[in-house]
Length: 146
Image 1 (cartoon, rainbow, N blue to C red):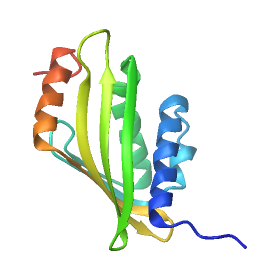
Image 2 (image 1 turned 90 degrees about the vertical axis):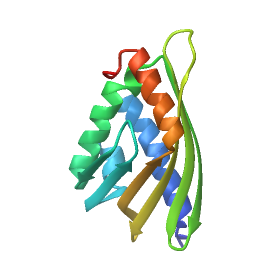
Image 3 (image 1 turned 180 degrees about the horizontal axis):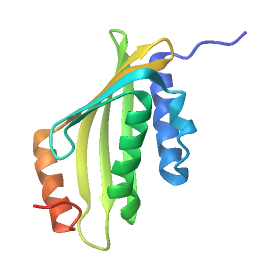
């Protein structure tokens, strides 16, 4: 008998698939984690956006990864997920490095809403102070216009 995963475990599986997607660019790793009509909304700079549909979400993730993560020398993500009132809340800190200088650090809270075992809505809430500092780091490394 298969024991169903709780939503926090499903979110962790999604996070692990995302990390594999960074390396492989294999969209099929992410497709099974989103409903067809899923919405991904990012609140706060430098990445504020609203993306609709599973394929749109994955295409946007690919574009973002190509523009930042895959251009950096290193990237780490520390993520802690917990289920609360039928949604998953995850606090995370992404750290990226280019060369020997200071790292870029971005703090985010992610909220995942599920339909069954798939994410139907994903919200990323960027910490405002962290977002400002990260935007400055990106500009200093010519990854965005100031």
